[in-house]
Amino acid sequence: MGNVEEAAPLIEDAAKTNPHNAEAYYYLGLVRDDRGDTPGATEAFLRSRDLDLELSAPAWALSRDTFEQTVRKVVEALDDKLRRHLRLTELYTSDLPGVEVVVDGVDPRALLMLDGVGTAGPDAVPTARVFVYQRNVERVAGAVDLVEAELKAALEREIRLTFIEPEAARPPQSLN
Image (cartoon, rainbow, N blue to C red; front, side, top):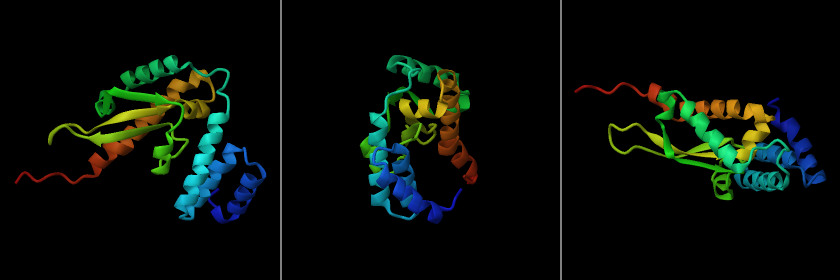
């Protein structure tokens, strides 16, 4: 509810009492991050990630190949104005974000990440590689028939935040 000071001792106690509770460590990471304790937050997020990996995938979880096909299907169905920002030859899937990106500040429960943002020339459209995290998508979706909708919403949100909104906020260039 936004009251970090009140929640912090409860979350810290939950993590100590339940050392195998991924949720407790995830929220401990959020509390520590809010307090500016980056090393402590990173430690808690990595612990949460490790515990999430220990959990079994849901019985309805997609196979790795089916998940990859689903990601491609959703990307291909995106509006052209959004899809043009993705490097379609660089779509990657994994269970969870890697340790190295969590240490760099990526949320261990992120559904996806756009990375390597750049352009091929001054007039080129900026593009990015796409990393999609199957366990996180399935956790948020909660059911096999909701996976595509969750992927679509996450992709649209990230593309808009990374490319569309910054582009709209830029002042027009002078014709001089």
